[in-house]
Image (cartoon, rainbow, N blue to C red; front, side):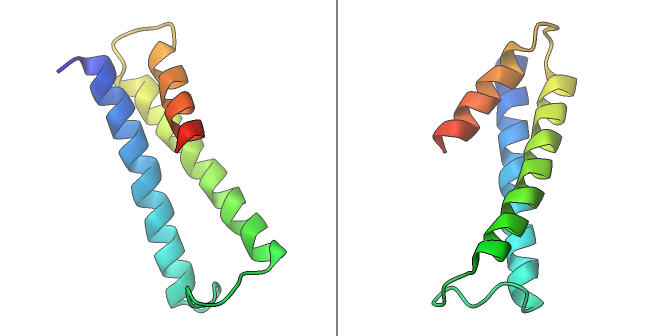
Length: 84
């Protein structure tokens, strides 16, 4: 498998794992309500903020693992994240 593709997959999996894990921790601590209840705007802002940080971490990982210097793999990961 192409190392560029592996870099994209690794970055995406990191973002997913961190996001799902942080959501579970927040819900377990009682910061986020149970899945059957609605969240307020402030909690959505909190989730958006930490997910943005996780997205930067995924982009950094993809850039570090990518065999190319032109950032095509990071841009592909950004496009994938936009679609997901």
